[in-house]
Image 1: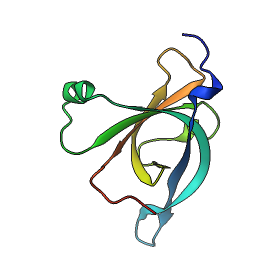
Image 2: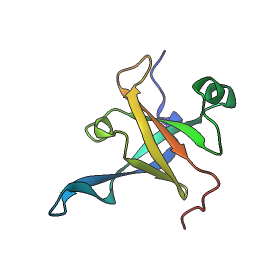
Image 3: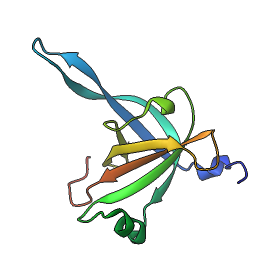
Length: 117
């Protein structure tokens, strides 16, 4: 596979994470805060792929491809991505299938939930 053109990264996403905090009795997840923005390529997972994976219900599974950098390499499950008023929960990440300079982020969103303003 050749190098992905800059034009393929046509969506501006906001990456949010929550740092653990000590509430005095336990370590709990703190509030989410934006940790950065990146240009990304968006690909919604097809219905056929969802059936193979055993997914059901009103859930939109989306793969985001971003360039690998010091921020994108830290993204793990539990982070969220926001794009055009929709909040996507990160369910997993991996290096690009054929390339090591990109990261694939798999997310889930519920289209039946209200969008953010």
